[in-house]
Amino acid sequence: MRLTDDERAILAGERGEAVRRALELQIKVGDFFGADDFVAIDSAHMMAEIESMGEPCLAWVEEMADLGGQAVVPTTSNPRSVDVALWEALGQDERQVELELRLTRALNRLGILTLDTCINYQTVSPPRFGEHVAWGDTGTVIFANAVAGARSNFEGGPVALAAALTGRTARYGYHLPEQRLGTVLVELQEQPAATSDWGALGCWIGRQVSDYWQVPVIAGLEVQPTIDQLKQLGASLASYGSLAMFHLVGVTPEARSVEEAFGGRQPERTLRLELGGLRSVYATFQAERERPDVVAFTAPQLSIVELRDLAGLLNGRSVHQDVRLLVTTNYQNRAAAERLGYAASIEGAGGLLLSGACFYLMTARELAEKHGWRTILTDSAKLANIIPGYGYNPVFRPTEVCVEAAVQGRLPW
Amino acid sequence: MSDEIVLRGHPGIGPRVEGEALVSRHGFSARYDLNRKTGVFSRESHDLYGQSIVGKVLVHTTAKGGVATAWALLDMRAQGTAPLAIIFQLANPIMAQGAALAELPLMDRLDPDPLAVIESGDWLIVDPPAGEVRVRKRQAGG
Image 1 (spheres, chains in turn blue, red):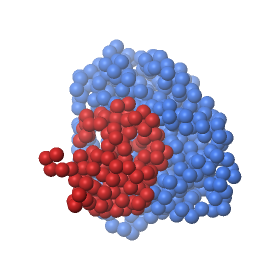
Image 2: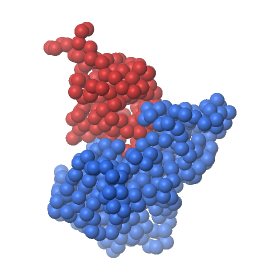
Image 3: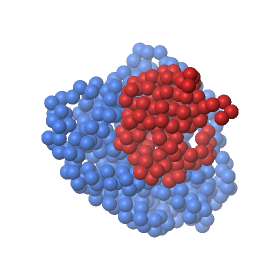
């Protein structure tokens, strides 16, 4: 990579050991992808939680703090593996909480805003069009790229921290204009309606386009999606396809037309979603147990609007005694939900409203073993994709169906 | 050893190693597919379900899923549940980041296509600095 005088000074150790290590790590990644140089970033978002880090990676972060590392751009943290207030109610191990608290202390010393959220673009700030950022958690990246028109690759925890300390990232992938152009055309002959339908659409596309370097262009949309619907679409595309970018013609800012989205190139292939295609996606998830063990509203964390709608469905009702209903959000929305009475509606029905966490990070395998959980029902297509690795049987259904099943203790379909 | 096949590409990440191949036609994610405490594939729909990656050279189509693998490779290395090396047809940034942190050998974009020539049980000499993988086919019947 071509380095500036400033970057050479960092590598020579003139700005301290933490930032030297950070840049060295970034150069390894940049070289692997043939990056020419670095680009300055305006913010970073760091995925850091004990479930995937374990103690070795925690020690690495603590060492970066000991070495004096300091974030030079605003940097937020992703959800964690425990809610420090509710871990006992869920039956988690106290050791996990101790490690997460150690991690929080290290992140705070590094100057990171430990908001523990995967919806920073809804509750902290969306990025600005055209700005370069270094975000991790795939759902945040695809939202930044596709919906906001900012520029980011998937930046996993270690390199997101590195970017926070150096204020830059290697210029490759989605920082380059040509990588952002469409490669696959998706024609809709069925329109998504419910919010979970957008997750189903992301699943349907992502299963067929499973390659980080591909960019689907979705055309033929006759409805205007809400931000929460775009969030579900993005999270699902990123999960099933490992995709970091999409265009929704007439909606997202780099796709005022199909031609603009493809930048004059021809699509490599065309997918057509026929009528009934979304219902078929739901049908690919079949329950092994008639009564779900867990019903989870999570992945991504719920916005205040999603919390309001869920509270409305649960208000005055009771979750079946043999079903565990879990909801995750961030601290900001939790506080708002308490003020607005939504937390009381969810908790009054017997739901557990967790903050600063996300279910699949929450030692899900250990919880399944401890509680005998197997069938999990969710309106998150993303969760349904991830959770089988932890020994669960996932069932993906629309939100209303999930709520009814939680109350009745029985899956209708 | 006359039937040695050489795959070439750009320089990869990590040091030269050699070991036995474990080949999949599916993608790979440490979070989606593995029990990271044992290094065994735990996703029932994965074509390597029930098999251990420990000490193997994983050969996969591409990376799938999210960002967790960027941390998980170092954690697994420390726990002794990591693969020896990973070869992809096409890697994504997360795998490169995870390999760089863990100093675990990673290579991609090789010619000829690794999935066309490598089978599970073949002996591989993975040389990221040289941008080269040497394949010694498993002895027939051996």
